[in-house]
Length: 433
Ligand code: NAD
Image (tube, rainbow, N blue to C red; front, top):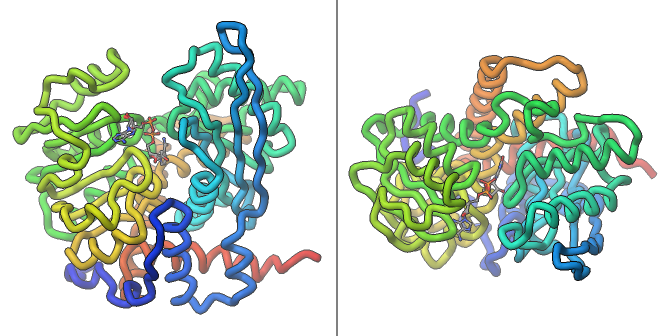
């Protein structure tokens, strides 16, 4: 497709953008409103889709290793299950709150719709700091949280997955606790499990693989040769480290990486395998000598071809967007860019591949895992990766075509595509009363 650069950036959504406070739910709603306006969404459908279907808050009392009881708060928000059982990760984070979970749940609805996955959207988590808890405490929190969600979770109802602060082990505990309650092993109730327990080949790398794929596609569209490109990655967990590794394998030079301990810069390129090894051994990048230390702000503002925020929400905001010097931003994290930053980035001509497309590789392979668990037949890594690549390519092309059709950014195009699909399904199903 021969589209010029300006076609990738629409011009009619900034007019509709209202000033707002910067938080993930507000940011999500701002984009939703713009897309709903363009689609001329019926008021009733609008109200239906903006409201989560169900929200649960549970109290999780745990006996800590020192014998004291501590009480944690757990959440699960089902944003929507029109397209199928709801799907979404479980986040363990000290500053988690219901607003954040609501935004993340809605993003899952849109993400599944864009990827043509027959799932609705959900998200959950526990307000806790996993880095300060022992393995035993984490296991008890996870099991008690799962026990409280027995009526919510289910392979036909609501299927959790890993997110920030949770991993394969957490998913194994969820699967085991759920299975104990229903008196038989049910692997399909959760995805992102260890392969030995019914997990899928390629799931762990899937989000990073999708991020790599859309980044390379975008570079090709802008005429950037990946083997001559400079890439900066914020966040060095599952998504960040694997995106960096796979892009390095494509010949990209990774000049900056960061994690919670700060940023690391090397103009000659960071040895990513070395950084991964270091982070695995030391838990963080703290003390990593493969690059010069710099702050998170400096890292985000580095001159580069592709910037991949892959840590958390609200990193590129109305305050720093004007200082971003990347040509492409691939959103590995959910909600790393606030709604206030959108028009600034557009003005600067930066191509943003939105989270609900860019990081959808994870939920895509989670869907494959669920399919394999339910059929009881497991695919090879090669088959998983080929199917992932195909679904990501189709989704990218659909979002891109929508952006050209409506003359909007890829982000607004992604929302238009998703909201239209869910709204059409809702109309066909009708409102049960
Ligand atoms: P993770 O817990 O594996 O890693 C998070 C990383 O971010 C860590 O390296 C941490 O040190 C770093 N970090 C935390 N705060 C930071 C800060 N203020 N500045 C810089 N770095 C910081 O989490 P993950 O699974 O890689 O998820 C990262 C993001 O990607 C989240 O937004 C998540 O919702 C999103 N996401 C994850 C998946 C998945 O499959 N894991 C799928 C889709 C989207």
